[in-house]
Image (cartoon, rainbow, N blue to C red):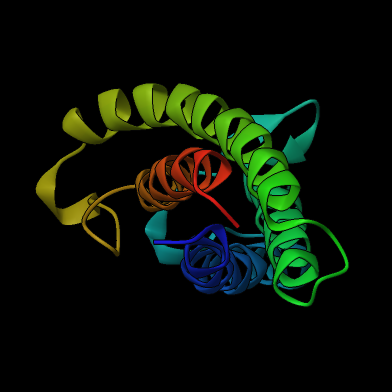
Length: 140
């Protein structure tokens, strides 16, 4: 599989992450509450979903640039790998704190999506990280 094929999948996943984190960010911005019956984890005074939105959007833009030939595919894959690594560490931290809180919540107040949204972001970051590392090693 070529680096461009990996970038196509990374683009779709990053776009999905952008839409999901964008939705969470918009809910927080316009209503002041967090979506899906969650507490909002904060980082440096801002909701973590805002950072997720930025990282996923960055990966979508980098992937699109690689697919459109504006950036060499291997370089786009390496950039995505670094962003996805940062996202994995970022979401991983919040997952560890959110899951601990989730386990202690009564069943009636559990999250609207079963697990905290940070878990779903983490899954996307890990998949994009794996794809990007593989794409960076593949022949363009």
